[in-house]
Image 1: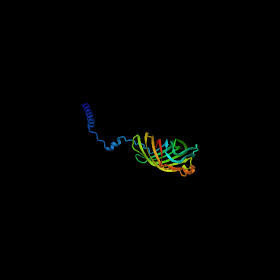
Image 2: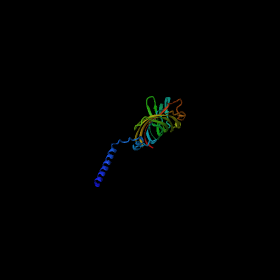
Image 3: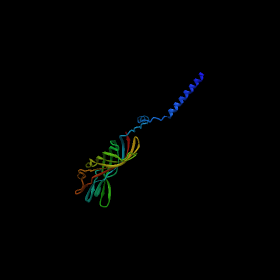
Image 4: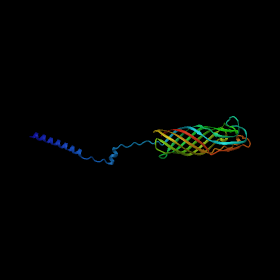
Length: 252
């Protein structure tokens, strides 16, 4: 009889345990509080944002007409660059296209705005377009070693991988020429536009077109070049030096 009671008590304990487990499964789950969710949910990783960019640039530098000398009759003119003497009634000196190379650095100051510094160097030929009233012949007249330093605001228009941009700022252009009268350093305005492609987290590639507007002055040029008596000398301006450059940037 005692064994029967013991078996009955064991069965009752097992039944009570099973009933308790079933009741626990049927109870509604406690809603997860905001604080608990913050602990359980995976926090997004912060992306490392580049604030500095350093790079190399290369491209094309082009100019325009500098000055014109005219005479009533066809006479001989001697270029300061050591070229051959030419005969003409008048000639116009213009800057030819040349390769340009440089360095660039940008610093992010707003969500899409960057402060940009550019240094570029190139060597340009100044050609005399000699006109004897029948033909126009280009003659090497002078050579310019050009150094440009520019500080600009670069405004990127989108946050996408391909970013169009606008440029505005100031430039300083130094000229070292064969003719001493052309040696000078002048300040000017820089305006431009371009496109930047973000190729990866640490590099990008861009193309820019910029116009450097300034006034070059040929101080004492008529006297130094020993122009013919009565020759008329006229300078053009303002001058435009246009650069078309590509740049490869590293991000930090």
